[in-house]
Amino acid sequence: TGFMLLDNKNRYPAWSLHGIRHRFRSLTELSFCPVLFEVDHRGFNRLLFDAGAGLYRQACYPSHPDIRVPHWSRGNGWALWATCEVLDALPRSDRNYKRILAIYRAHIEGVLRYQDAEGYWRNLLDREDSARESSGAAIFTYCLARGVNRGWLPRRQVEEPLRRAWQALTTFVSGEDDFNGVKGGTNFSTDPADYERIPFIRSDTHGLLPFLFAALEMELSSLPLEPQPQTGSDHRKDQ
Image (tube, rainbow, N blue to C red):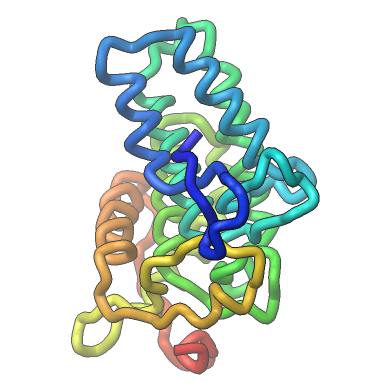
């Protein structure tokens, strides 16, 4: 479910994606409680998953469902990574396993819907005017490759978008070996412009570490790892 917070204008209580990966992992590692886990995961999806888009909103206001928070890239990455952690921790015989696998696949389908033709994702996933961003993309690439390697996804269906994702991701590595394109810490807001005002930070660990995880899973997938030439891509204009 994330945490109960107030938004940046302190108007209403809200549920947020922040910390969700560690929350779900703790439920599977520390004396796993099926009842608590089921309530937690059901509530999380009911409140934050936008089935029409196939994406999670960064936060929501349960008492004001008409107020919409955008589909932030890195927040969706955290949610997808959390689901991967749960799938890895749950025995396949567990009664929740198939339902969690369905959640993972539905989210993957939504994420791929907003990948552009060159393999990139936007900071706000469903807005073409949003900047290309690398930390969410790194997590998506990692979770896609992990799904192929674990047998959660049909390799033939996701191999091409996964290859494009990896090639796009390598263009964020500079000649000085910095990993670029990572937006800094982002509080939630109902105004998309607030997300675009967040500066990019070179080699910020929000993106660098998922990039390294993605590289490891890509190597295990046996897909080709050739970097994409850095000519012709416009994401650097956003930074």
